[in-house]
Length: 364
Image: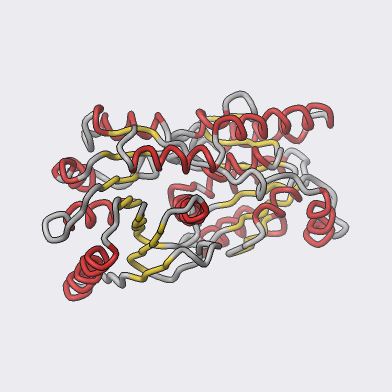
């Protein structure tokens, strides 16, 4: 099958990571895959060299939009895909409109969150819905939210849960020892990790406020935040104003997330909203204790294999972290194994790739 994956960008994020992982899986299964992206830079890339990568080069100017649309149309006419699977809002809308000017045999629109914008974006989804063969989203909660917002009728959207490479994300004692020694030095106290773009929906102020509360209660954690984004200056200023800068380390863009997860004691997700919470599943696969907000599809992913707290509540997030800090070693080991087993059973990358292939050939 000739598969064209189209995504708005390939910056660091859960949707981008999933799409690049899927492209690798598809070519390994014998499919011919082209991955096109609208805007740069491309931080997340496929590992398999057989995936053809194409930069469409959209920009916000009228000329840039027209040029990008022409480039995408040219790619479709040359590649002649059996299916186009677009990912994220801008790509979904553009690929739907492409059907007016290019031969598109089958189009799958994939959203990746409970929230992909306000009323105008939901209206754009609604009025272009018939141009797509089917829409997917990454959790049952996200599907229900899109239906409730009238972005798509209930019978034209299905959940396709995100998938994790459980070989890549597995506990490594050697990584734990090496990185903890480097990151902690002589410091004693729990190592807490958060991974995600520094964007408003991730609600890192919630986490920094919770960390301040824990320090006031006598705990001595070190918080690592791996990710980049426009919120970084404001977050650094907030950490300084709270007097917690010595307990927060902004790591920036990292390519060793599995190793960081092995090194950590607790993984925390403080988000105001999420579609799926891919990093939560990755931490679970690495047998970490997870403390996460009940945002979007996170509850579906976590089940009983972690600690769930309400979003936008620093005191309750602090309470969840405090509970995690006080688990016995036997409890940590048991919960970690339960978490990994849950991911293997429900969220493996192989299962996700197979489900997409069934959708591509119409067997959904």
